[in-house]
Amino acid sequence: MSVLRAGELDARVRRLAGALAAARPRPRVVGLIADNGPDWVVADLAAQKAGVVLVPLPAFFTVAQRAHAVHASGMDGLLGEPEPGFEFRGTLDGLPWWRRAAAPADLPRGASKITFTSGTTGTPKGVPLRSAQQWAVARALAQATRQDPRIAGILPSTKGTL
Image (cartoon, helix red, strand yellow):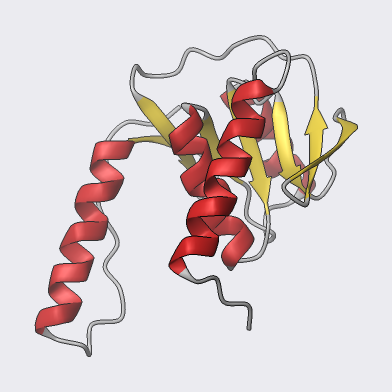
């Protein structure tokens, strides 16, 4: 199991956020294909810090589901594993970095992450999230687990899809 201490996490987030902000052309929407772990956390926080919309792409998505998420979100950058239509551009803080030209999608103002549903009953739907929503859930989870450490997880309910 990989572990990042607070100082290491902060340093990696700053480096990756700086690299995303400095990338040219500046990415609008960045996909992430990574296992749950330190790289995922770093990419998530760095995208928020850089003001880039993040789209996590689950490993269990089919090729068609991933292609839908890429197109629907207007994804123009990708961290992690390769996807069709993206060109390798090197690494950012040790993560493979891929780019493609993409028309901007009509995203809700303030969206900082788009989570796509599994699409088990049809095409995956993109659920836009704002940073404030995500941090409110994180604070609520932290508070709940301090009160009762048996709580394993709580999933927020959101409205609106892409």
